[in-house]
Image (cartoon, rainbow, N blue to C red; front, side):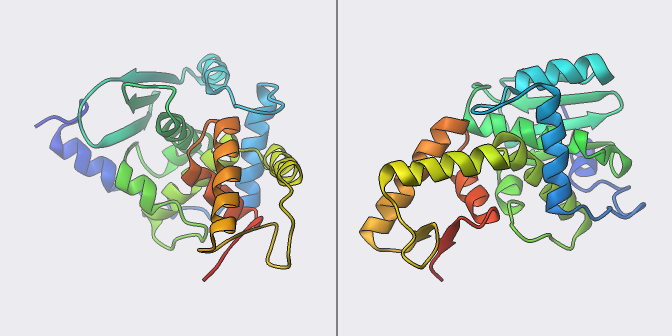
Amino acid sequence: MLENGFSEDELRSIRQPSSVTKPRVTYISKESIEELAGHALKSISHTRGVVSLTKLIRQEFDASGLTVSFLEEPGSALGSITFKPPEIKIFTSDKNSHLARFTLAHELGHYFLGHGRYMTRECIRSQDLDQSQHITIPKGEVERLEWQANTFASCLLMPREDFLTAFGLLLQHLGIRDRGHGALYLDHQPDNLNQFNLVSNLLSEYFEVSKTAVRLRMRALKVLVEAP
């Protein structure tokens, strides 16, 4: 049975890379991943707003032969990457959707982070993407690779300085003030919910990412405080 061009045996090897435990996955800090994403953005002269993944892909095609294809195929896989030769596939009918952009940035994370040292290929599903978007670094080898790729995707699509600048300007424009709980406070009170939804919606539109991605980025940058 084939799914998105892979046999069952191939899918098993993708989900559980046999080489992932040898060598062990190197620890990489959030700051180092942020810096790596910054270098990638600088290489395409990105300044602010929506990041052009197309420019980055074209550049890496010239540099290493990386190819990216969008395929309208049924199945639960969102995307995949093989490393020799470097090839990314995104399984979507809308390559401009927020999910497709994050999936592509995630696979580019594997590419830029050199994860070909640990596995020959990788395939990600929606549940894997949801489960691996943690603020803390997981202990498992495979999970750590996914965490690194997701962190890179977040830093790439929502660059720190641009994100914090846009966030600050929005709060100023909307008259949202820190009342002692944090720059943006989220609990079940209607006013706080409305403020959170308004800010996250506007940032989602500005960067062309999902509200979930915005929320995680705000948490990672410690500008969003959520009630326990």
